[in-house]
Length: 241
Image 1 (cartoon, rainbow, N blue to C red):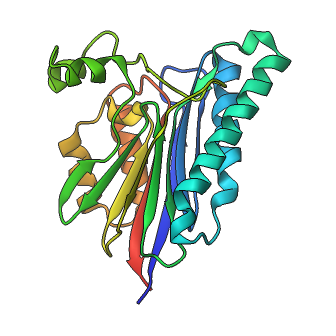
Image 2: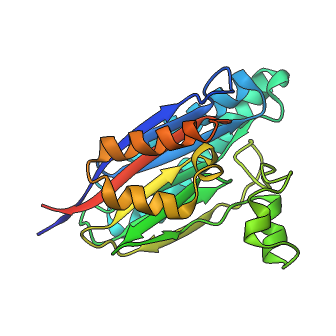
């Protein structure tokens, strides 16, 4: 039996923001979430540029080409964002996070690319693990032992990212993993992870087997928590076919 990826994505403006600066892609080989920043129109443009740059990777890709493909897409996104800023100086400072998962055509490997504070979680055998590390000021303080992870969740500067795709040189993190049948991946913007606790995420991922229902439930919980930001969720299941 070959392992396949089955995914669904959903997004909501939230209850406070006037527009949605998030973008997402949920396909058979690629899933990705981007959270734009730097002003309403510019943030929306940056996240769309990132997703448009990476979406062509949603094709059968050899295992040994996964990371290089993601690197190339991020370089392309960076160049296009830089060009957009050059075309309109008022876009200066715009940027976007990007968290993406690319599945090999054989089903034997997947690669993850990450920059910013959108997250990728792996739910495997009843246990939820945050696979990405936030590129944020508060995460840096946690790493240095200045504050605890619990203190970081309510820190006034928790939204300050230390790197994002803004047209300049960036250092994304990349990782490869061996998928297993039954794995469930959650990719999300911080509009979900900042307001819904990890134990609640675990509960929903475990109980809501239908992907559409799972994504809808997570967005509903973020809205019930005040919906202070745009909320974007991608659910991707590794299945045997």
